[in-house]
Length: 423
Image (cartoon, rainbow, N blue to C red; front, side, top):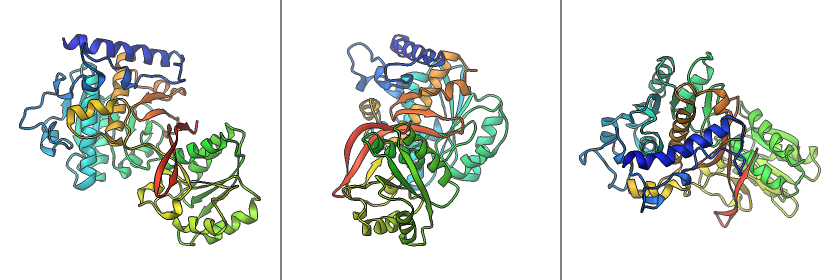
């Protein structure tokens, strides 16, 4: 019965990825290799109830260790008791902060559960997924990652989620190492070390593109001074060019200047912009937003565009009427119902990112075998469709994503468009 359950799923994965490898496109313009909605359920079941993760071979949890009925992520004890999933010929390493304290550890265990579901759905007979606990320690995560990419056995590495460890990997040279699908927040990426999560550059580009698509032509970018500013500027300019719009000026600012100077400079350099994009980096955008508000922005003629990093802080009244492109953390696509039925809690983006990366690995292994993890596949310009939406990886290691587009109204995000993209 198990082989019958997996056969239609794997057939879909093979056909979709082979189409991507041959340069063909689906109707949506992207490979549906990661589309969980295409996963066939056993006869008499809906997709929401298909393939409980704990039933896949190599993943059986004893009642004492499992936590699929606890209403929360798998426990540390359960996760660390079972660090190898699946029996497939393609070996993939995954680095997660399973035993880290607080939110970091909780998110790591959510990613573990997402990986388990993907293995049950797609990867059980294709991959042997070895998961190692980074403990949330950047130094230890770095050592584990270096060991994984130099072991000669792993065909891909998923993780780490520690930013410093991912940044270290991006600086390493070597063309023959396996690709790394890094799960760290606010990671810019590097050659062969791909940034999986939504970045501020991606959010800013998608937001600007959405407004440009409605006819806005002249844009201003206000961005924190620092290493990330050029990446954000480049991405926004490229996204605008698709719609015949231009980035009139980019103004780096210091979080300590109160925002007044950069807004004053903007007024003297650009006449009548249609929209202002404000990136915030790791700081608060409120000082700049206050200075803009004093100049009547946003207003009837000037649109204000924010980024996902604004949302790392409580919603401020100064956010009102701004537009933001970001992932909807309450919506994880077609895997949501099936995940909740299996693990008894609502999945979030941590679950979805992990699911997508394991599903991608399974798709590559199915279509191209253990040696199919290469730049041609991973940097396919048509992209992939997963539970977090449409995305693609670039040669510099950054990712580009399609995502919902929101407007801030009365302190809440109101959906404007279900999908927009900066590419």
